[in-house]
Length: 238
Image (cartoon, rainbow, N blue to C red):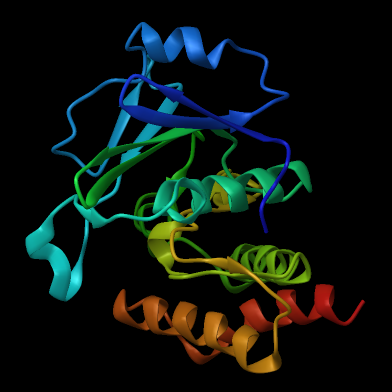
């Protein structure tokens, strides 16, 4: 999915990348350490909370390697691949965070990866459901929320993106549903995701992962998941 619109440059011992249509001087900001922060954290809010910096860490069985990844060319690194998908989705009008830039630093047979995106003033679905909805939501309000989530998952699939880990923490929600405000939904975190011709099995896999996440947080009822599917089908079948 290599995007010719993405500029890649070497600055000192690092390779940076960004979209050529960006309205700020990425290289100057990078040289002035505008994007620097504590790389012991996976996620940080920087630039007065306008941006989010993601420093990639290994998980699971490879967690002992912390933030070290085996050497790959720049376009195959974790941060470049996620930047590329975000850039594609954002330009297609999909509800996700706008990518600003990313970079990779190499050392021997390893590399470390970073990504900067614009922040979104919203809560994760888990936080939103706990803080704003809790026990006060009625069936009609819940239906609006989960139908909108289903619609966004469908929009993602229509753009041929398979999400690597679709769960409640990767969905942002804004709007007080109890007060009748419009609900906005964003899908984030496209690490390990890919652009491909999706099969029925691919689509069902993403939906089942979402279902498992809901069940884990004890928010799932038979009707909750059916509402996600209702919103999903309304887009896919139209």
